[in-house]
Image (cartoon, rainbow, N blue to C red; front, side, top):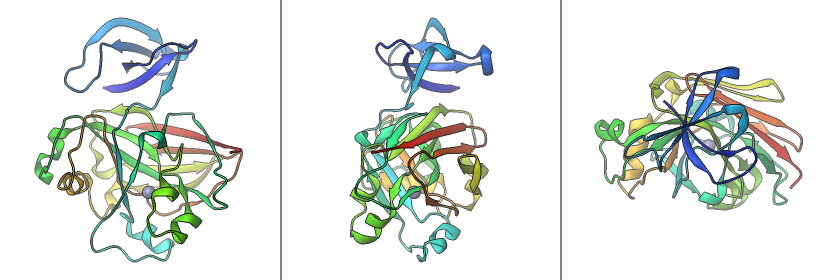
Length: 258
Ligand code: ZN
């Protein structure tokens, strides 16, 4: 299944839905309520072209792994951390597919980071790696936008990585994909900048989700970002960043004047 969140293009309340079909045939089937405990289609069908897609989740928190690909750690001159590096983004960080994100006035070195995002489907605490598949509903695509200069200047990464619009997510949650070896490509204005595979993660999806759940309860809709492969770099006002993950989809974000 592909789970979306959307409003009618003409405006109106947001709903969750299932995306069915491709291209011009694609329709969104409205769901009654949230998709986590049970998926309840209402029978209301709207062509995809007549809706606006929103971020497919409303997380209480986004937990993100830093330096989870060895080549990316090296490209920024960092060691691979012995203990995983985890930081957080907030509900105010999250924006949807096709979002326009304002270039923050605080930075002169805004970077993209294409990442696999894990979506939690069940409330859980202290899950073992073996139990993680039971608490994950699916996967989406993320762009971990980062003010690299602030990240270097400030001890905690919160301002550098959790500013408004710093967490584009989407375009939908794919529930049927195996996350262990998915190709991940990021383009800026059509030029390939990252071309990696989730097989190169130092800590895999099960390890990442289990690790954060030892410290805090994860709620349905919470998101775990699994780190970025090599190839990150600066983006400017006017740039269009597209992160594609095989088997999931493509998340497009446009950088506009802040
Ligand atoms: Zn990242």
